[in-house]
Image (tube, rainbow, N blue to C red):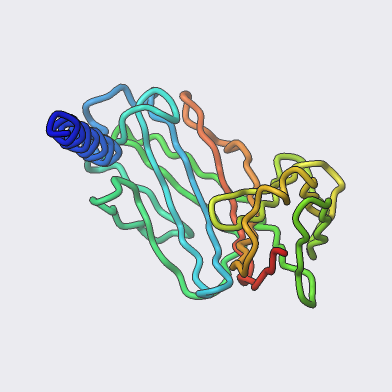
Length: 228
């Protein structure tokens, strides 16, 4: 049994190093002055959480694509939301700011080191919430959960999360999420906290030459859900 224990220790060590490497790579960044300014990809986010009544503003810059190396803006480059500078989160290597209350829309203004200015309005966050009353899901049978808010539009996704399982719909015109019987039978019985969110993805009207995206997310008040 000794060789199995040694092998397991080696596996755990290698797996730990792998995970640590992933964490480090996710935070790796370069100064924006080190890359071609036309190759900077931008990602802007507005995330409102009804549970905390906080809107989080995020801006992310990457080299070449949405999965490229993260960039920290070099002077005199800047990123602003509604005219205010967004501070840099060195741990995540993104620009991030929390604002009290529901900020349903706003304007991002990015200025690169060459003085080019890209101003983009976000559009409006669409709200979503759980239906009133108790939610009981019976394993092995289809369950249809209506949600309140606008009907699903283009580039619009409503998602329900129960533990490690996510159920979503992006069907235009829909006002409910359907969980099939095969899926409900795969959910362990018991009480859950349900997480409901809505995300809309658009492209900036005034994007950099490399492009970008805008993500608007609304997180509803959590709700107790029973699976039988």
